[in-house]
Image (tube, rainbow, N blue to C red; front, top):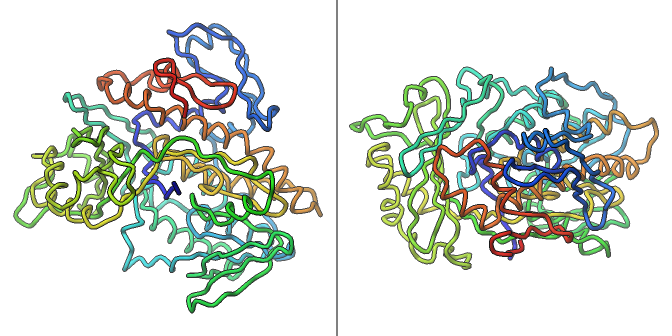
Length: 519
């Protein structure tokens, strides 16, 4: 099955402390109830030296606090962000970026700042703020890792911090508990629609780099000639055009054509997918109450006039669907956006619900559970939009053997796709770009591009591997089942619980104490 882009919401599970990060590179997390193993190794089968062993004292293991000897993890700590000064003359050759999503747009800025002439190719049209395609727009929770990466590159994100910031999230549990997860300071995270973020990055690229970046819209990548360093595209007229590169960045998402060309032409290069695409989501955008309807009666509704709050509603799922979750957040203009998600009930891509959500009335019946929080007119509009839009599939994890080959580098979902469950897709993609910028800045004068990419790969791969492995914990069926059954009051040791249900096998698969399932 070919995966599609996931919802990217960034907070399906409610712990969201940016995963410490990736549980200190996934060296170890020991819940207090499990016997302490003082030394544990996490190794990749093809690159066994990547992740060093971490030795924990009994006190550290009991508390669940983890340390790791990685400079890359220092970015997780609050610190003063300072834009990096780079070269200003275009002397380094042509850098080609495939894909103009968040990773592609930010990497273009990084490369232009370092002195490359940058050519960006995107198969879709330029995002139009007046006529957006909401089928492909969803909310992204950009945490301090993502914001830090943007600000290091020099992107101004102040418009998303004030005057209407993102305060945090709330979970409404089916048994009536309400849990709040508000961050402090309030400006440490941002909630942004994907298409809006992309357009903002393009505008910032024009301000920061001027004409050093050329954008080619509606140019679909058809073929990459690795030997001669040329890429062939189909342009808006349907004709084939080709261009040469000195450095090629594949930032073209979960179904990356650049990654596919590496897999086709490089004998030892093959991405590995773990798990099944079990999660399905649909979205709605900017719904307002009718003229005669009351305002939504949301929990802590007094906050809605001050900040954006992301609310999760754990709902009953119509069989054969399961693990139903509704998310809604408010905008400054008084409208609401969000989505509805389940664990799929059928393997069919045409109807993954098993026939239970086929018409607008089916969605209205599910949304009846949100009465009286959202008035009938709002729920009807939500159902109408979702009935007309496609399902987004997520749940699988991509692990590539390395992030680069020669003068080709993969970024973002093209290199390390995960579902929204761990809330790190866009944050990791943006961090890829800022770390690439740091690698360029620290490169010795005259260093070859392939050597620079090799150095970046060595520094970044361990975090990428840890991110993928963490997601495989969270997406394990038993972890999901146990999590879904938890009372809302049991929030403190959430990640520890997921670790307790899974153990790492020598072949890097995740096996379960309860069912021996391997994902």
